[in-house]
Length: 261
Image (cartoon, rainbow, N blue to C red; front, side, top):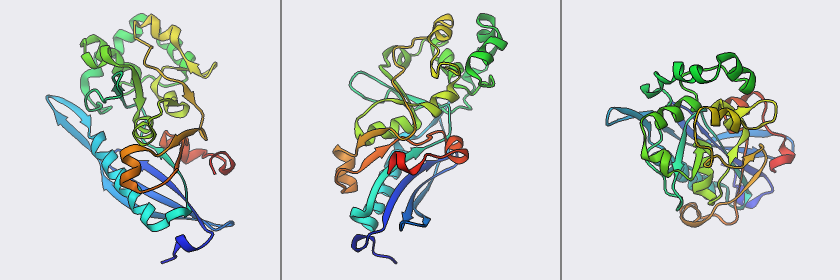
């Protein structure tokens, strides 16, 4: 095995979360060639609780930190940065102290089913599509939020920040809150013309918008790993950057290396 701690090669870490599994990978770069190595992999899947379907996002985060600690032990000061991607649509709510308000719902949870006709009774289907450019599907974030409001759920009332899955991981690593734009685009709440939250659309649906954050482009420096995460990983000043955090965005486009190296 190459000893990265004693040579000039660099390693860039990717956290890739899928609906069935997750992994921490290292991109080993020698100046001309990039090689990918899986550092840690772990299972993922839905969790049934109280008649609803959720994600064990906290458990995923623990596995991610374990993987990052393995990478730190292997690569040392050769580590350059971390980027996180995942499936789209799903999110967690934070209260004003930054605490997670319940386990995030799984996009296949059936609570959204009655919301389809309700939305289109308020805003025509064609207009919704022309504004957002997103095919209306029951799994979309906009239907999930409508279902929360319809059920008068306390998480929505107490929410100070809505963070999609990669945003949530970035927050737990760095303490910084924001919404990466490719992930936000999966929500059906982003205006495809202005590339901003479509507050007019959301207001017509009587949905709150105060918890929607600053939109970050891929390549944005979120911050450095801090606090308990830094102690567990045993790193120093390791930066976290946004990537195309919707996994499809990362797969089809990627980010120029100059933006996040």
